[in-house]
Picture 1 (cartoon, rainbow, N blue to C red):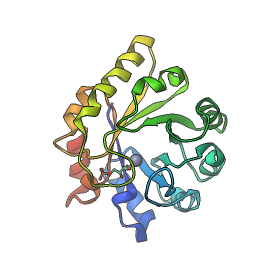
Picture 2 (picture 1 turned 60 degrees about the horizontal axis):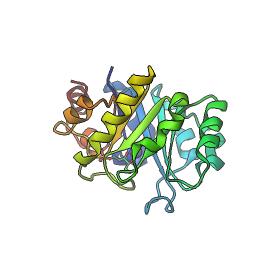
Picture 3 (picture 1 turned 45 degrees about the vertical axis):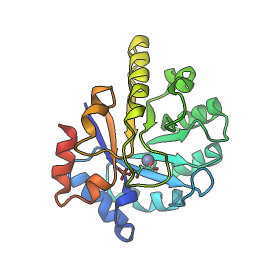
Picture 4 (picture 1 turned 90 degrees about the vertical axis):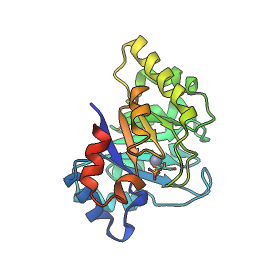
Length: 214
Ligand code: DX5
Ligand code: ZN
């Protein structure tokens, strides 16, 4: 089953709670929350207090994408803010196994993300414990960039590995997902689609989500 995770990065931040609720009403499954620290990526967004402030506005699964340099130091904060899935970057400075274990011991589902130039095989040693792998389809840091089709073999490689091991793994793609790029991503095995600009800038957001699910 394909899940849609709209990225609030493209939403109206002055009404974040209402935007989150609207996404639920429009048929989204998850809410994608992009946390950036100005170090791991050259942009700053928001942290755990902002996420916590909208937790009671919607029942959507909170899918927290940490683009921060030391994710291990903040896992408990994000758990307390209401995160359901916590995804961190394998390129960050935190020890990978320890960070995965910490997320799981807090009671969240764990995901690891890879940037476009990072081989996806780097996540294979941790696959058995992960709920999700995020294959970035743009360089992390900003919304509204163009989808990079050259990342698709990585989606297929991790899907094949999960199938070979009999794992129930979700594969997320993030960046430049719209009505044109969605098919190649799902054909290669992605089943959680992040979309910022395409959903939030659409005249009919519910229709945009339906198109992605098709
Ligand atoms: C980029 C973020 C994405 C971004 C996607 O670093 O991780 O989640 O919001 O935005 P679009 O869908 O506009 O490419
Ligand atoms: Zn993201």
